[in-house]
Image (cartoon, rainbow over all chains, first blue to last red; front, top):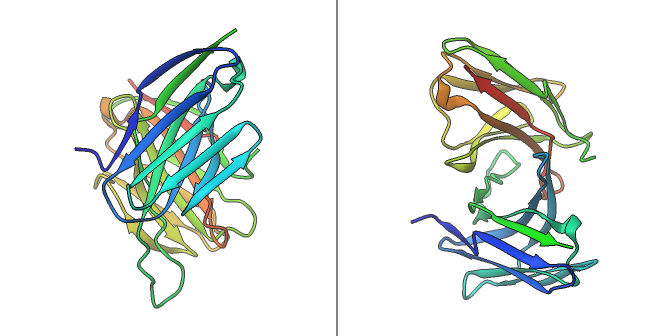
Length: 117
Length: 111
């Protein structure tokens, strides 16, 4: 079983619809990232969360640490939102004496979102 | 534009060969991470460097090695290439900001 599970794997929506992508994880984490990967391949970091909720434009990300679950919502979806959305978790940080920390990420398989006009 | 650069953008080579992928982090970022993205495995963490020192290792094969230089750029060396090594290789940088900024990736095709 993967440490990070996303659902759904594929999602098709009509322009204007409200979209939710879910992420569940099984390890203790210090942060959760939502990433967007466009068809060209480039990856953009959308959010980094350790608690609560963050909003940026039409995107909202929430996390429930007790339930080990996060959601990414897109309001008023648009065809340009079509991309793969990837959830990634940073396992609980272990401080190092020499400074700097281990920020290794573990990734979900991604959700392919297609928004049709 | 994340500020992270990777070269080359595309690389086509043959089995058994050796290649070097290069990454320049954002100005001021001390950590560099390497990731492999293949169709069947998704994104996987390979290795992290912080200020020239190896910090964490993931699913990196023994045929692969990396280093971070004093100017903080990093190179990922892949040797004895196999067909299954064909993938997108991303580097990301971070620290002091813990958010990771990804480069555009290098698409490696092994024929």
